[in-house]
Image (tube, rainbow, N blue to C red):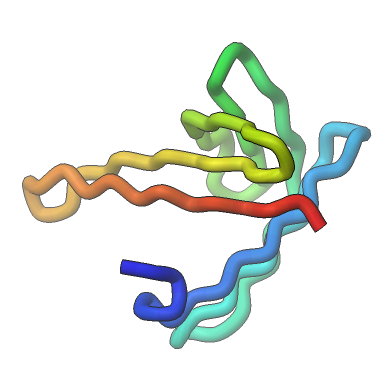
Length: 87
């Protein structure tokens, strides 16, 4: 499914000082998140003050950051691929 089909919009600003800001808009409203980030190999770690660190597998090609997340939902592995383009 696409972001449009999920009815979700995600904007992430990753800054050179190793902080980030994210805005997630979906049918439940708007969520703003801030925190710090670090990279080790192909793993991006986002750490916010509410949920703690989240480790994400990523690749970068040109201006595109691709993050792959696999979660278990009701016993089924669900893989979500998020693509972000540098503005």
